[in-house]
Amino acid sequence: MVTICWFRRDLRLADHPALVAATTQARAQGDEVVALYVVDPALWRSSGAPRLAYLAASLRALDEATGGRLVVRHGRAEDVVPAVAHAVGAASVHVSAATEPYGRRRDDAVEAALGAVPLVRTGCPYAVAPGRLRTGQGTPYQVFTPFRTAWLDHGWHDPAPRPRAVPWATLASDGVPDAPPTAAALPTAGEQAARERWHAFLHADLPGYDVDRNRPDLDVTSWMSVHLKHGEIHPRTMLADLAAAAAASDRDGALATSVATYRSELAWREFHADVLWHRPDAARRSLRPVVPEDAWATGPDADRLFEAWAEGRTGYPLVDAGMRQLRAQAWVHNRVRMVVASFLVKDLHIAWQRGAAHFMDQLVDGDVPQNQLNWQWVAGTGRDAAPYFRVFNPVTQGRTFDPDGGYVRRWVPELRDVPGGAVHEPWKLPGGLPAGYPERVVDHAREREVALADHARRPT
Image (cartoon, rainbow, N blue to C red):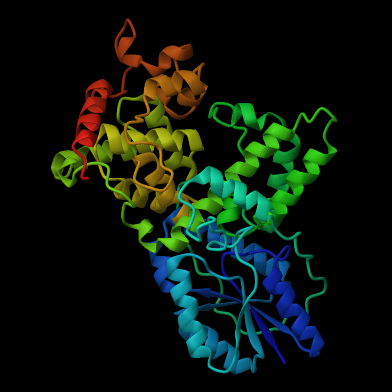
């Protein structure tokens, strides 16, 4: 009998345990595999234009990889999946397990609607499934470092082999929908592009990653968050490649620190997924209060400041460069993400949820657990968060991590004639601010004191 492989956050053919299971069962029965993707109108409406444009490109790449056999259907999953299953007489529907709140609810609804046709969950988007690791007391981990230790001790399976000559079924498709236009310059989508980008990083940028990862001017980060978001590569594959790279390096262990550092970044991704597994409300609500509710700015003045932040017109060059990079590339360097988030929450006193929503609308790698929990980390409201009294100074951050100002000059053309590190404090230039560059919307030193005073009267 026919089996169905329902693709979601796993738009690839390699290291795909659910596809292996679907293919194995179909071959045993002398039948075919339906490659199904459901365009869920609720998810489509809630995604920003850059992410939709990238998703459409990734689906086209997957369609090509399946020999034009990807079946795209539009509608609610609980209606579409059972309809396809019953139409082809499917023996089973195979999926990678969903771990985020919406996906878990959706899959429960689909399972109920399928009736006698089993929904078989095999694997998930993470090396270690969220919810699996517990403390010695049986409780979820609250702090990253012990979570990482448990994660490393637990380990993960080897990458699943890519099935060869999958007997894809031919079925009518609604086609990949047209994505809304976006001005952002997006990376190439698809599994092949993901692997090429990953291997390029391993060879060129991994050796200095531990030292240079915080330097936005050097552009040596991997950009793999985009491919991980859409499941064009599995973190298990990346972890295996990291281990192989470390094993093949010089005997002095030159790569060891960089490998451990990158592996920790993957562990943070898994920690955030674990937090959201246990606390689905963390996508919207602070996990702990850090200031009284009246500390958050609202109203027309807050709206004006928010727009200045979103447009990269705050008068703080590193913040403005980051927000302009976001508009231009639908992506921002991680160090700069922290700086711009801190500025919104602690300099402009605007609640993290508003910034997180803007990022989710603009980012091509926008992923609920990573985006929301990283914002909570900066805001000091999440698990193992930066303390609220840690306020990123945008000038100090710029001088430390963009010492010659190359990153700022790339994204803020008004400042391209300002030499060296002076670009981070243009208000101190002898001739005044360069033409077209705005005055600072707030005084950082003053707003830092306001933030600390608000924190001192936080709810107990």
